[in-house]
Image 1 (cartoon, one colour):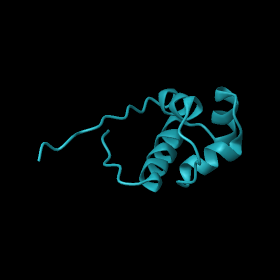
Image 2 (cartoon, rainbow, N blue to C red; image 1 turned 90 degrees about the vertical axis):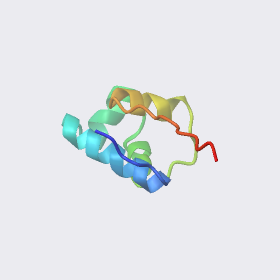
Image 3 (spheres, rainbow, N blue to C red; image 1 turned 90 degrees about the horizontal axis):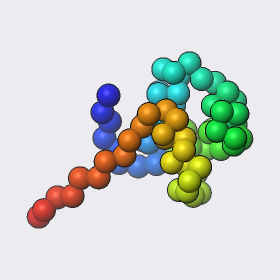
Image 4 (cartoon, one colour; image 1 turned 120 degrees about the vertical axis):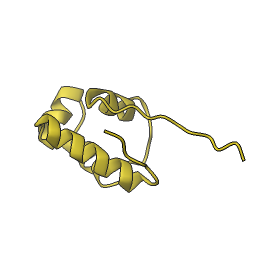
Length: 73
């Protein structure tokens, strides 16, 4: 699956879609990651205030890889 990410909300929508596809509730995913349900909620709604190891652990758990493309203009 590919998705174009242009904002925090786009990334959050992708996280939500993949979480549901894996059959996790927000609470189950949070427990598996050792974080809070509120953090998962904030990510899914484009509200995280930080991009840190927890954020990347969440993406890895769901199998999401971020790839940057650089326009050579």
